[in-house]
Structures are given as structure tokens and as C-alpha cells.
Length: 171
Image (cartoon, rainbow, N blue to C red):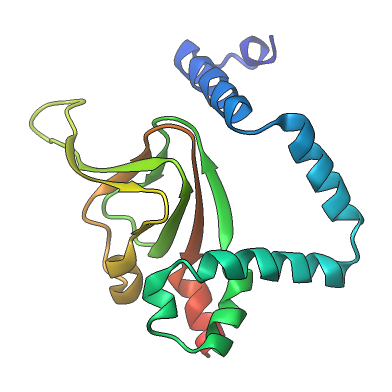
């Protein structure tokens, strides 16, 4: 009803419904809300410690960082990891984007593709990225534009780390 009142297109309404369904299938809403409520009640210092501990576990899985940076640096950038959730067919980044980030897939799968300019709606799949894989490493370290687009295949949960945040830690 809310979507009709706001005059959303049928396509957008369907996209919202599908996203909500996939999100609901992947996560138990009641449990998630309870976790958020408990987290909000923690002291700021304890919240910071929980975030650090959780993100440190993820950072240890990102080999490109663990193999190339010292432990104290990794501890600093843990706080810059940002969790992102995407519904089916949702665009993560577009080719030629200029905000280089590195992405670590926690759950789900990502399709990386080039748009076929000769035929509308005919993307060329280049490769897929799965759980525990990284995406955007090259662009992150070189700051070059992405030469392909990326979208989630189903419900996908990733963590991102922007080049801008890393440079801020280094300076």
C-alpha cells in the first residue's frame, strides 16, 4: 500500500518485494532485531570492542591485507570495514566508477560483467566472485576505474573498505 501511495513503478515495487523476501529468507528478523537492541545497550567502549573483534575476524580472511601489512595497521583499519547487503540483481558498482574499494564476500555470489553496447540488456559475464573471495583489489591499490560492473546474484552480504579510508589511516 505504501509503495502505491508513493507512486512507485511496478518494477520498483517488485524489486522492493523481492529484496525483502530474500532478506527475510536469509536472516531471522526477530533474532537480528534482538541483537541490535542488545548492541545498542552496550557502552560505547564495549560497542567499539565488539566491532573491532568482529571485523578483525573478517580482516584475517582477506589475504591481500594479511600477507602485505603489519598487524598494528590491520588493527587500525578494522574499524573502517563497512558491512553492505544486496538483494538479487542489485548493482554493487558500475564500470568506470571512480571510488575504488575492495570488497570481501561474506555470503552469496557476485557476477562481474561488461555491458554489451551493441545489444541492449545483453551483458557479458566475465567472472563470478564467491564467499571468502575479494573483489576490486587491483582498482583499490591502483585507484584505476573499474573496467567491469558487479551485481549480486542472490542475497549477498559483503564488507567494503575504501581506498580513501586506508589513505587516511596511513597519513
